[in-house]
Length: 338
Length: 291
Ligand SMILES: Nc1ncnc2c1ncn2[C@@H]1O[C@H](COP(=O)(O)OP(=O)(O)OP(=O)(O)O)[C@@H](O)[C@H]1O
Ligand SMILES: [Mg+2]
Image 1 (cartoon, each protein chain N blue to C red):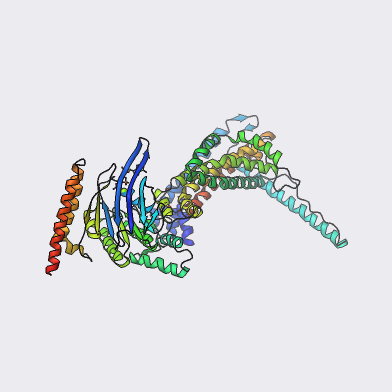
Image 2: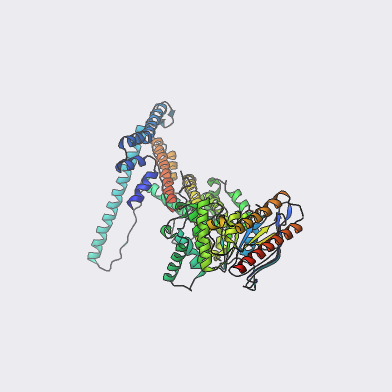
């Protein structure tokens, strides 16, 4: 287990020398590597902040000067404070409710108790959680569709010729074009008195699905159809059933490419989600940005910039996450994954 | 020994290509008896792999067919196990698991878990791979991969073992080791073997008969050479053996003459070769009588 962790850490470029130094491999050289691996990016980032700061203060907008790094950091802190305050309010609300209900029960054990949900405005953190939840739902649905379809198309030339034009046509469609259709269809079809999911959530998730399934689909097809002819021959000589063939030969051989596709898909999904939330006013980071834009207070630009960094950072983390999974499941360790 | 074990019966095949039909094989007929070791030799692209794939059932003959023990076969099956030229092991499975996949498929419900494990290990031991059973193909050498491929094929308990240039990509030393292993295994198991090779020494050393194919397109069998060297054969002893060298020269001559003059009618030559072969045989018989 430890070996695996240190192996994974080593895969992250800059952590490698630290891991190696911990193992006692030639400390001086490792420090040099750290300086190059970690020092250079940090220097570049500081330079970026400097340029940003000097440029930002010179641009005047209707909402005041464009915020520099310091102001944005301030906004980040205040968003965090707001989140904590919101949490406290919610906890106080639930606490009051609990006390009230207990009193009621003490008076009359048969009394009906009602639990009300706290209905305060969602904080920045809540929006992040909603967005993550939505993107994973849409992504999971996309994978659940794209991988089986990809396998079938990859194995059968006829299916491929049938499906390929559809893929080519739908692949470049922007989320903004899907959204109205999805919204209208979801409101027409998804009617229930006690819905398991919010309608807005379903709309965003499906839009994400529609936009992000293509890389996985295309890569699965390429992976499956590119399987070594000899391996297919082996499965024929063994008289493997169709299902066993797919499970034991086709899928494992396509796994590296399927995961490459899934990684691209998750990236696309995250990008699409923000746009969809903005346009559809669905809860999430996109709505946060839009609300701040509409709000137009002197803090708005700073807050939007916090959102921008958050979106970028989360996108980066998601990508690294997929990369680690990809490395872990892929038998083809030689295939350079970056 | 009946000659009716495996019958390649007037097989022809045409491929559909963008430029129309391409006739790769024309009227290939060969009868192989049980336990016989037959080599196919011929120039690159003449259709050796095609013959083997038709026997394996991976390709369908346009005319004629394959009869194994009185039954026509036209689809692949584990009783005709194939050792592919580039090992074709599943790269994500260890050597053991690769053999296991075949054993589980072939001996489903016929062997218990324990018996299967022993059978897998036994076959890997046959090719001297017991020390690296749990390594994956990218962790073992080319020769070792090829051995695992042979173990996988043997583990299917095939009636006929088909090998497409099994040692083609290996260095000379590894190749001779594997040839020795293969001779040993075949002596013990008495499989029927059809092997494609480019290596004249290998063909003469291992085979009971060498089938020499004419150049394509529309390739067919040019000549068949009986290799009547006594077994067990020792490569070092044979190196100085006159008869061995004569057989070698025979194959070389065939390959070179076909190569330089592919259009020359070959009937006369074949007869000549056959006569030489017959004379040789007579001589040998005499020697045996004298002894
Ligand atoms: N699927 C196919 N479609 C069209 N032509 C084919 C096909 N398979 C083989 N051929 C042709 O049939 C001929 C024989 O091919 P084959 O692979 O059997 O040769 P070979 O004797 O095994 O050659 P080598 O020694 O190089 O392996 C070649 O000319 C090849 O181009
Ligand atoms: Mg070949």
